[in-house]
Image 1 (spheres, rainbow, N blue to C red):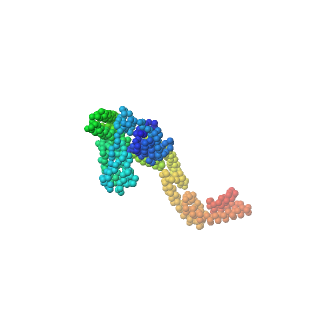
Image 2 (tube, helix red, strand yellow; image 1 turned 90 degrees about the horizontal axis):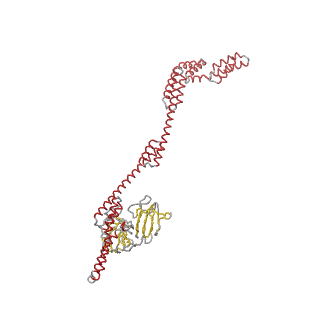
Image 3 (cartoon, rainbow, N blue to C red; image 1 turned 120 degrees about the vertical axis):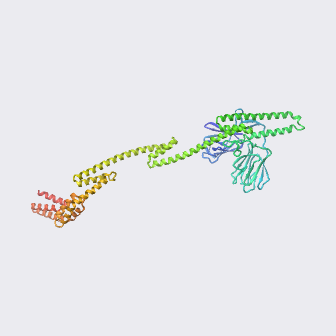
Length: 594
């Protein structure tokens, strides 16, 4: 016989006897071999146990099966070989040979005195079992159920073939061995039901009714295999629920079979040795049989006592699952042991409470994780739009829930750096604003002072500097300066209006006086459009007259009549506007006359 040894970090955490059959390995608690670690998938692998080796088959897990450093989908292990399902190491060993009168009660091989998991017994045989069809096309037909695996379905290769359309081709299978009778649904379309309850895999006993589609079958036996008043137990299951019990290593059923076999052997021995003809000759043999049976019953009672004590000790130490294991062994060996039943119920209630608390904590963890993720997304967005105070606030909320959250810590650092930089920029901006306001105020006030002094043109020029100092009107002064500029220009237009009208009247008769008046207007009101237009209209005539006098002067100069030439040039200066280039040439000639 083979045994499985599971280690983690060189520490042995599980030892299990492997009888031929199939075992599921994974993280969920309803697996045959539970490996509680996040690296292990919920349904990680399947163990198929043969006589001398074990096949380990991966079921599409994320971390696969490792052997000799290679990831494999399937490995075959012989005694002494190991495979890895990270972080666990699974090793197959050969179980040491034991007396042929030993029946193993638990999956773990332990010392009888310390762990109470062995009991001496005589070899036993399996009862005869049959399946009788109660409803369907084959109603009334009986099928013997041999030890081993029996396939039930509509396919030709089925061991029990049911010709009904509601039955799948490979509908279910029944495994019959020392572990008892276990029926397993094979993914049928219409389901497998035991006593009206749909199941996937379940222990069944004689008298149970099985429904496959529209076919109803009853399980019958010459003698009961498993007493129904014994509450099955499994980690995570209800202590009194048969529907959830799933046989593991046959450790409990064998006790029931042992008791049954002892009873049957005793009855047979009685008729064999105490018949009318043989009773006198077999008294010694009968007495020896009674002594053997007494020893076996004493061994069972010792097992009950040891397991009860250990169950109580584990219960007091709050090791509830361990306590449930020990107490369940007591209930299996002695179904009427009321104290063990009550203690088992207490242990299972404690286990259920612990699991409910774990589920509550897991739910709280998931809610908190969702909240942290939402805060993290908002913090990232706030950081992207340079909303540093909000980003820091959100990240600090995350750190309040998880102070080791790396990204939240980085966001806080970036937000604090961003805040300091923003503050520095704000300070520089405020300083620039204060300087801008001071410069604009200074220019504005200088313009007001010039206006009060009567220097209206200079006042306007100064206020125009205000508009250049603050072109985006970030202060109040540009608006005020524009208002004053318009007021002063209007005053200047009003003062120049009579002069402009007089110059316009004299333009034909005395263009030189009109020019002088227009130039005077532009001196006091450089923005006077009417004076500028008048001067522009007079310029061609004035230039022509001025150029004539200039040319005459040049002729007189060539004749040696410098004094007369100078008179001509002085007349030319009166006609040519000062803004014209000719005015400068005439002025240079006139300078020779001094």
